[in-house]
Amino acid sequence: MNDVLYSVDEAVATITLDRPEAMNSLTVRAKTDLLEALTGAANAYAVRAVLLTGSGRAFCAGQDLNEHAANLEAGRGLNDTVRAHYNPIIRTIREMGKPVVAAVNGVAAGAGASLAFACDLRIASDKAKFTMAFTGIGLAPDSGASWTLQRLVGPARATELLLLNEPIGAARALELGIVSKVVPAEELAAEARALAVRLAQGPTSAYAATKQAVAYAAGSTLEDALELEADLQDACAKTGDHLNATRAFLGKERPVFQGR
Ligand code: T3D
Image 1 (cartoon, rainbow, N blue to C red):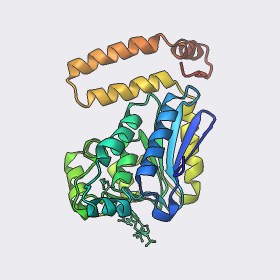
Image 2 (image 1 turned 180 degrees about the vertical axis):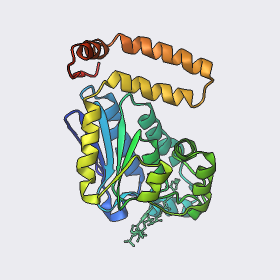
Image 3 (image 1 turned 30 degrees about the horizontal axis):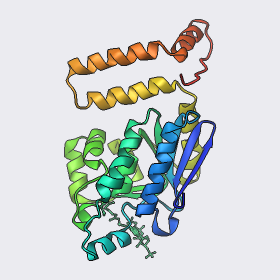
Image 4 (image 1 turned 90 degrees about the horizontal axis):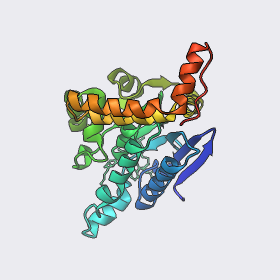
């Protein structure tokens, strides 16, 4: 991988977008690397949580507009990058049975904002900024922003943010519920890592079931959601983590989760 750093420690896979000179904007190579890293983390038994962040002063400025312009000028349009690259990246984040934390260290624009929205939790530096960017260059939302943002802030606010494309600072993002915590820039790496490690030490199967239940319920009837919850709960009840945690509770001990 050239444009993404990948490391695993304490069962946390840290994925860092690493094109700081271009604000971690996404070329085909960067998107291919990111998908490879996410797929590797999703499939690795030893990984129980994922931390996604950016090098330098940006989280991710979205599509690399130099590459994009070259495609337009050559008559290739978007060169199918939405279906070929962005969609699989977002699906991999949403569907992996492990929590994904975004440490938003700076600006998150366009598909870069969408990437953050797709994660399960977002913690931001006080220097972070979200800008939808799409309409700024005459495009509509992609990489799941039309789906994720309205689930974070509601349809009216999501429409406003996407149409008006006004930058939102970290404090406003916290008010709106786009991020769950804002910390001083110099504390972000440690805070986000502590959160990811905490999740990596948790009941991984129960977290996977929680992600699945919430995603399904967002588009289902109550009846269907109840049915899936019952199935998922049956599966969780069969895990060693559930048995051990129940015993630990009754023994007034702290549970130790093995992730299965
Ligand atoms: O194929 C497809 O396009 C379909 C998919 C689309 C998905 C999308 O993501 S569409 C949205 C694409 N992104 C944008 O429109 C964001 C463009 N960038 C900005 O609006 C601003 O640069 C930022 C708000 C991100 C940051 O502003 P600021 O003032 O902090 O920095 P800056 O001076 O504007 O940028 C610093 C450098 O990064 C600059 O390069 P230079 O002059 O130092 O050589 C700038 O050109 C470069 N940069 C920033 N964003 C991009 C970029 N280079 C390439 N692509 C970018 N997206």
